[in-house]
Image: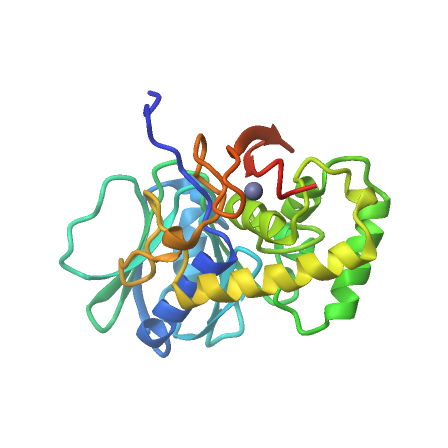
Length: 282
Ligand SMILES: [Zn+2]
């Protein structure tokens, strides 16, 4: 059944990192008592093996890579969770009733539980040994907030030279840059004054430098405001973010540009709904 009027949006780097930071003090050191899988296709290996592999383990830390969360276990194995389009990962009391669309529950010995709620059912939880990470993880490109600026600029320029498509498609390609999605790609391109429709190979070195600076500034500001919440995203404590109040173009279809007053344009670029200002972005 189609859900009319609900637009889901994938959590991007600021949202996933905010979830990581909110969950870390809650789950670090916690011992897994039981695991309940309600959607077999959401987990790998198969549910029985997945649950057996987690039971009795302690979580020693959480890292993030792109839009993936990586829970480290005390036996060296790793559980990676990708929220995809609409997944939420929320820390609950064991007595909290399961929300609709709960696909996975990890119960801890301290009486708390981690609930994975996923209305679109695209989210995944994969348990793997360090020697055999899933392909999605190994294919990831550089982190946008890497301190290796020159390396990142070289990667962007090289990827752009090989590509005939628009620059926005390059920014969304997780094999090049891991963690940007539709919101932050639109915001970064607006801040950098680059049209999302511009062929990636026509972006100059000076523009890549400007884009890099804008990307770092926007992602860091979004982290300060704990991500962008529209309908679905909340952090690990169930709290919404505030960056939606700072968006310049994303979600402002039919509104005017804050910088120049011109009407913003909404088009599809690289298969995604895209917002930009045709006056400020060239
Ligand atoms: Zn403008």
